[in-house]
Image 1 (cartoon, helix red, strand yellow):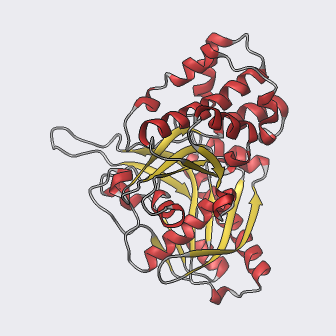
Image 2 (cartoon, rainbow, N blue to C red):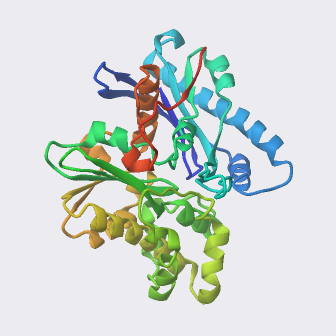
Length: 373
């Protein structure tokens, strides 16, 4: 099984898959458990420093484990399997902080900073509740080797979407967007492009009460504001060379409000239209700069269900076919959960699954920690 709760903070996606000895994966069931609005708000608050945050984060980790358990039970019910028929669960946890390669370096001692990444989950509790081995903590081993710890999915994208002697680009649009470039020669690159759904979801929820902009219909009612778009695109992270990764530590409501100060006259619909364009342009720019030979962009994650966003991506990539991952056999909301099932499979076999070309680490590493049932 693979269980994933991403930066969109909407809930937990889980899949149950059969993986053969060669690592080929076939999904047999998919389940989703939404987060309640109060719990989603608490996770958002834990993205920032706050009162008694260690205590609150520990309890949130327990709650995440219980949400994951709910999805496991759903998957077992769908497939009529028992817990002892499942080899392991790959459990990502909920990222609330991601600050790699920062803070703890020392130039005098020539010690490079490691920084940290924090995914909330209690994997021991999940193993206890499910009676299944759990593999968690996939990112820290890469950080220890000098890497970003993210993104981790490009190796999986290579396994399921690569085509012989053809350059393929894969774009995952969750709360944050990340791009994988699967080279015709077998080389793989990958990094976070910047914003995905996080800012659009926040703005939509603030002004309409809806958790997200269904089909991008609200954004389609507005007008893109060139001056506001230019301010958004001036963010320094977007102009850094890979490897790089980011999260809500950067692209958050405070960041948005700061850039809106000079554009207070914009209607909420125009802001939404411009935020949608921001995500499309930031992603398309990286595709054109680093995957210019690609003739296909496979889009997964919740953003693949946003028609307006997909339309704007296609507009900025006229020479590239923009398609949903469903066309290639894996529905958009199953891809990341499937990736963590595959990563757990690699962990159990003591096989490396990180890519130094993606994270910048000193070498490939076996990722994940095993919590026996």
